[in-house]
Each structure stands twice: as structure tokens, then as C-alpha cells.
Amino acid sequence: MDPLLAFRPLFPILERTTYLASHSLGAMPAAAGDRMAEYARDWGTRGVQMWEERWWDMPETVGSEVAPLIGAAAGEVVMVPNLTFAHATILSSLDYRPPRDTIVMTALDFPSVRYVYEGLAGRLGARIVVVESSDGIGIDEDAICAAIDERTRLVAVSEVFFRSAYALDVPRIVRHAHAMGALVALDSYHSAGILPVDVKATGVDWLAGGVLKWLCGGPGGAFIYAAPHLSDDIRPALTGWQAHARPFGFEERMEHTGGAWRWLGGTPSIPALYAAVEGPRLVRQAGIAAIRDKSRRQTARIVELADARGWNVHAPREPNRRAGTVTLDVPDGEAVCRALLERDIVTDYRPGAGLRIAPHFYNSDDEIDAAIAAMDEALAAGR
Image 1 (cartoon, rainbow, N blue to C red):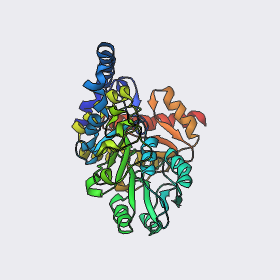
Image 2: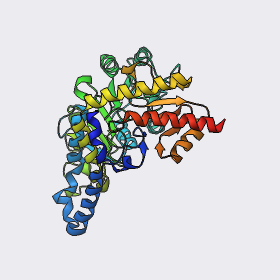
Image 3: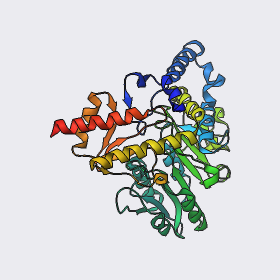
Image 4: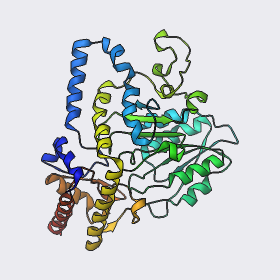
């Protein structure tokens, strides 16, 4: 018996659906619904008093639920509305005067992150160097390190690429960046909750991620970790009153507070923070090591079944390079994805990559075999 299957009853969607899309949106824990009802009761019975009683501190208290899953301490992680805001805040905290005027990214980073960097970099005086991929699946760390030189101010890369689930060797990149005098902002949106993530061991300067996917915390819950010394030395330009040293003084001039609160913005999205708590708690209970072991085994099974059918696997072959998703470039992949949805087998399709299958700790091996069999039937019907 797989001990992680004991968590299945805690996720209502699994009663009626083969849910293989946790790389896009993690299954909702039943307890998240209870927390949303709690929010409604709190608002309905306590009203504005809730700001003082609970709400104002929630970006930090919920961040402390995430902190153990990325190797951070309580109080070092704060919640923000989305990943784009998180990266824009980090980007805005640095100056880009020559000779330190370069930001290094990769061609496989998530587009929304690229949009904000490319949109703001020029206005801030920065230039962006994009490291290309030779195969659309991964990027060799040699190429990334070669792009990081004495002009580099910031390295902003994804730990796991969203289309292929290719996992970078983060410690190597961080070591080289620091040796060159650059800072590192790591995007963990596709790694936290499915891979071991440790900000202290890797030495990253910032880490931005979210609870939407593998952490099963729903939309509206992104997070920022900053190395503690940065929260004393650096002031982000994209900011708001929660980051003020005296927010209820309503002063005309901004004076940043210290610590992780420095990376907050305006009024937080309270309903999302209620919903965000339960998923990370369950992931911690399941244990990242056990989740990772199961993920390796199940993704290997998907690769094996795809190879037997001659399907192109748009994912790393090396287990340690492969995160939680296997992308299959099957014929008429978008139509096959729709056919699976009609049978309540939930996956998704990404142009330029293929059909993405992402089992999580609550999925059974039988569900993987059933999904592949349904793909066989869809392809046969299409032919």
C-alpha cells in the first residue's frame, strides 16, 4: 500500500475525477472550504475589528506556514497577491547603474515573469541577457554561468521550467553568481511542494513562489523570501503601506520597516490567505522526501508508457533533472486533452510542448495507467 494515498479523502475532487493537473492548480483540500467559511464568519461577526485581531498579520502568519517547505525560518516569508508582483518588487529594489547593469534570465522562464522584467528593465536602466535553450527542454548550467559576468546585477531564473519540468542545479548557479558579485532571485513556483527546496542551503538572495500549484493553496497566494541581510540594506520601490515602519501613522513619506515585511505592498487579499493555509500543512504532513520519491517513480512510469508507444517525451530523461510533470508531444495533443477532460481525466495542453501530466502525492498508480489507456483510445478514435 502507498501510505500517501491516505491523504486522498481530504481532497473532494478526487472522488469523481482523475486529477493529474497539480502542476497548474493543486487539488483543493476540503479544509480550505472550512477556512473560507471561517473568513465569512469573521467578516460577518467582527467586521473591521478583524484587521487588528488577525487580518493585518496574515501575510506573515501564512508565510510562516510555507517557510518550512522552502527551508526558511518563521517570519522570513511573506505572502503577496501573485508571482508577477513578487518579481516586480524584487526587480524594483536594485539600481542598475553601469557597470552593474545586467539581468540574466532564460528563454524557458515563465512568460509572465519575463513580461515584467522586460517591461521595466529598460526604464530602470538595465539590459537583459537571455540564455537560450538548444532543445526546448533544458538549459545547461555552463551556458547560464557563462552569461553571468562582472556586469551582472541580478540573475532571475526558474528552478523548474514550466513546459518541460526540467530542474536546474541551483547551488551551482548561485555559487557562480555570488563569485561574480551578482544577486540571485529564484522562481520556485514549479518546484515548491514537489521538490526539496532550501533557501539556506542554496544561498539564494530571494525566492519567489506560490501556493497555487503543488502546495494546493489556491489562487492569490504567492510568497517572497529575502535573505535577512537584504531586508535591512535594500528598499524596494514597488511598495505599499504594509511595508511602512508606522503604517497607521499615515505619513506622507515612505519609511520602510525591517525584516520580511519590507517586501509587502498594499492591502492584502485576505480571502486568498484563509484558503492558502491548509494545502501547505498537508504537504508538510505528507513530507517532501516521500512526495519526491513517489513523483520520481510515477513520472518514470509515464515516460516508460510513452516510450512503449513511440510518443515524444518533452521532459528530462534523468530522474534528478525531472520535477513533477511529464509533457507528451502526442499527435493532436490538444484534441486528446479535450477527450480526456470529457472522461473527467484532468490534464492540460501547452503549445510548443504538448500534453502535460502531473501526478501528485494523492494520485494512484492506477490513475496513471488509466489516463494513458484513455489517450490510446482517443488517438484510435481520432484515426
